Picture 1: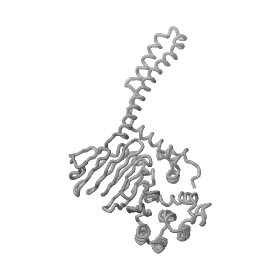
Picture 2: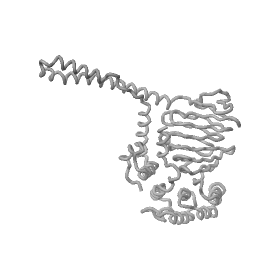
Picture 3: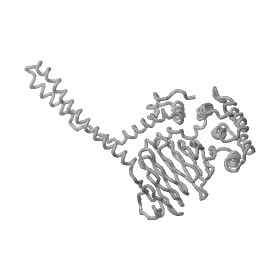
Length: 386
């Protein structure tokens, strides 16, 4: 659907100046277009960078000083008006050059300071941890109000303790009781945690694919969002996205989970199929059987029967996971909920033609980013403004 790039709209989009429908279309395009997403990330980074610059006011009395010097020159030059007229432009030019040089120097210092601050925060070898309750520990060492989580360090909470991690300069992670989490990597292009067990809440305001969380059964990849991720003792995890978009990946298997949706993972299987949390209970139960209990065609029939238009999120993911004979039934149910776009055929979908699958996904995303849940980047802009 989005064959043309949206570069010309990106500045207005990042500044929240587009009409809602156009902003929604740009957001949907960005998820699939790496080129436009890269441009958008640069614009957003520039906006965030500019916000770190200190406001520098012009020196008090600057204009008064200019007026006084002009008056002095005018009084001394009255007998020779033509001479003053000849000298005044040169004087003003010299004065302007000196003021511009001063302003430029102040701007360069401000930019350098902001750049140094941003680079330090983005590449600092450790993250600050704040105790929210009880007595969390870092590598078995208790700390009082604040601690430092270095690369390789484990943060652990018991049944009565909670903590908050500052994720470099891009957000925060709240750590719930009975959780074990480790800092794996922190650098300008990648920040990574490992959640061995327990529950975390992430709020990230960064370009896509900068923040990662490894679990025993999948990796959560952030696209600028807020989400909850829980891991049980078996290594299974549950992801619930409240803002933006998160990808779950493991061994080539991927699930894209937008706001309002959830996804389960299992050790040895990887990500299951995403679904909206307000989907019918029978659909969710059948989907779990299909993903993790070898439910096959019988479970799929229940999913298809219970599906709503929003549930094309689930059905599209199932196309690549169902056996070939079942893909026709999935296609038929999807087209009964919303027509396939031009160029997408039943035969092409059954044979998993990548171009057709991607085209249909682009079309369906307008339904997946529902009006009752925030759109990726639209919600993100609100976090930038905090």
